[in-house]
Image 1 (cartoon, helix red, strand yellow):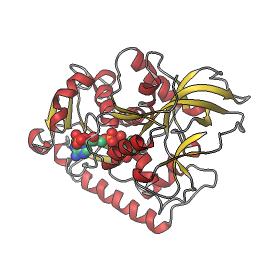
Image 2 (image 1 turned 180 degrees about the vertical axis):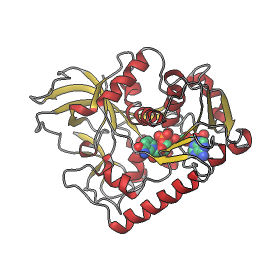
Image 3 (image 1 turned 180 degrees about the horizontal axis):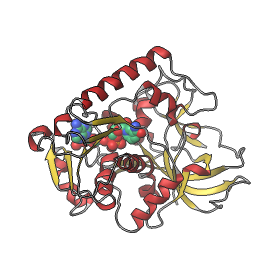
Image 4 (image 1 turned 90 degrees about the vertical axis):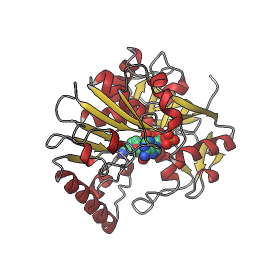
Length: 356
Ligand SMILES: NC(=O)c1ccc[n+]([C@@H]2O[C@H](COP(=O)([O-])OP(=O)(O)OC[C@H]3O[C@@H](n4cnc5c(N)ncnc54)[C@H](OP(=O)(O)O)[C@@H]3O)[C@@H](O)[C@H]2O)c1
């Protein structure tokens, strides 16, 4: 089968499309999916470039991609939730990585039925980013109803889902976001009227001068600015959940990225350094009476089922800014380069893998 991969750690210019072995059913809980569309997240391009090479030894060719949507073609004997022909979407676990391929295999635990109203391209854009946003918002201790939620980068992958979930599912009183100039009018157009209450052009003004100090109950940090925004947080009850600073070494060790059969271990020096940096961030936050934590997404079919209900009842929509064909490797490289740069993208980038 055709699969997007790298032969050695590389930026997108080194991505290649080659024939690799099609996955085979071995575990009775496994499902094989014919992929129709996959989406790219920052972790795909960062990991393919070796960002975690100090922590984990990857094998090559390194298959790219965690998110996809497609049709079930084979099921193991213990699979109970899916049948051949089901339209599904998933964020693959590390052991199954390689969603930008014609076929993938993973345990049924990680799969959800695709929202029926969505195309495969739209469905593939959801799993990793939307589950991350949902899990982050659920970590707020207490009720977010009526509270002020700040989500920087409201038209990024994680940001677009977080703004909508905060408002329409968690009933936040005020949702604040930041985007660059050309995206200002797009926030209402793409996320819907009444989703975001305050939009700040972060290229023209510092959010710290626009948002009242001590007014934010919950910050979902998608850009790595947790420490810069401490003064905005409500003292004693403010909570920051970050996915864009750095994990502690212990969190990284226990994360889904390290969940592989050979149980890789992070070198002690690296783990200790990450733990120390995380402790410093926590202490800095505590001086403001704020609780700071980094979090890792945990992939789960149950969360995908929950997100499907929000899509189908109209509370959650996706934004796909770019779609490229897997067969057009130059277009794939260029689109992945935009994700790699961390600037200029709109919503999610999707790769069309098969023609339905
Ligand atoms: N820990 C986890 O489990 C987890 C899960 C998901 C994501 N993440 C991480 O979270 C981060 C965000 O992921 P994502 O998928 O949302 O990224 P993304 O979709 O690639 O978002 C990039 C967008 O963010 C905007 N942006 C960049 N810097 C900004 C800033 N300072 N203020 C406001 N907007 C800014 C850019 O828009 P402009 O072009 O308008 O500047 C860019 O288009 C990444 O670092 C990713 O690795 C972690």
